[in-house]
Length: 222
Image (tube, rainbow, N blue to C red; front, side):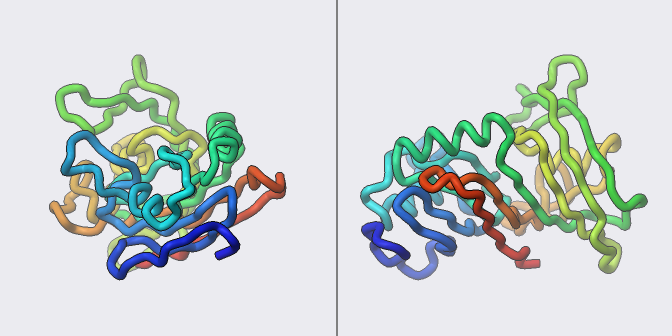
């Protein structure tokens, strides 16, 4: 765990520490845990808050990207303000390579493709996103079929942009895969409390301290 001041996590924290050094912390977040604090006292418990309890020297707002509460997988946090700035620049300029795995409902046709459906917030049904070709923000996702499993399809995703619920809507929308992610209660047939089968499996970026390209991987738990 390098020489970063560290407090061992208590059991059941919903986090796996994958990498720790003086500039970054990489964790694997469980499905059902917020990545960052939400609005209100009841939504302050989250991955970043739990990590900051383990590493008291970490800056107050360490997240440089987010995962949906229902999405599991790799989450990258900055320890210092300078690391946060450098990492945020990489995300903003799309220099970070991200990979996801999901199981979707049905056996889809085709083997690979690119989905470009502009998205915006549904103001009447927050936090749901909708496809809006006129007022939506550009959203692009590349996908590849890995296999078919008992009426479901395993898909590898590479999001080019990072819009809220992008992969979830691109999977479910008739102009996308037309196959919602298993367990998705917003865009599919999932029920509250059911695990959504979408996992952030890979991150590749330049380390903010060394400048070297580093990669991290977390296999999908489904």
